[in-house]
Length: 251
Ligand code: SAH
Image (cartoon, rainbow, N blue to C red; front, side, top):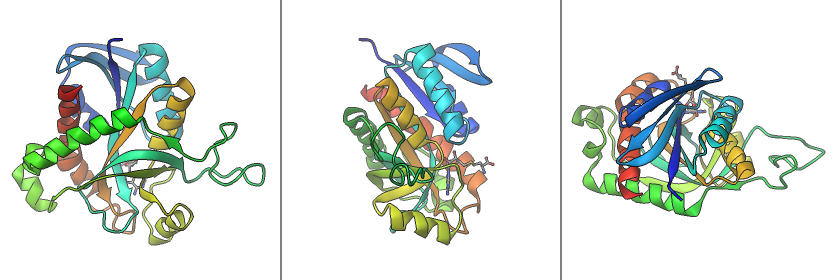
């Protein structure tokens, strides 16, 4: 089957950089969302801004799957670090996704997805490995293969790639208390964001392979807001463009 890869990103500017990679573009608008259909390195792709939060991202993911018949879905964006040792500019690729704000106790256990009998949704091993190869190639070439030298100095970038659990919730986490609360309940989680686990649930129900790639933009504490905007523009956008381009070269 010809691959038709859906690419979702949580920041409009970030996804604009990915859209710029597309050739033979067609734009389709549905439900206040713009889907750009085309090719990247000759691979058929559909690229869209997910919008923020679990509900918005679920709507966008479901449309990508149902209306555009994507064969795979890649989510790319930023996240706050939870685990010790992770630093701004590192990259996390998902093994499992969990909704840290889901709690239907006492009906079912904390974090369990209603009617799905599970807490975690696994990302697709092949797609996750492919994303890992792409990120490793770029890191091995040097971070300058993704971003300009000035940004490397300014943000002191020396990226490490991690594979692990990602938690999502409808909350921008920017306090030590909230960070520690999530970690105490879900100790294996590497980072926190607002869409990945929702997209994972949509992909589980539609039986669509997916993976989530997140650049660490902050440490999910009181420093979380500092320079977030500049980091997105100067680093996260450039990372996303380079990573998606490399993935499509390897497909
Ligand atoms: N301040 C931004 C909006 C960011 S919304 C602006 O004005 O443009 C936050 C996005 O970044 C979400 O898509 C979420 O997935 C991700 N994110 C990054 N760090 C996060 C954190 N500490 N907690 C939750 N989400 C985070």
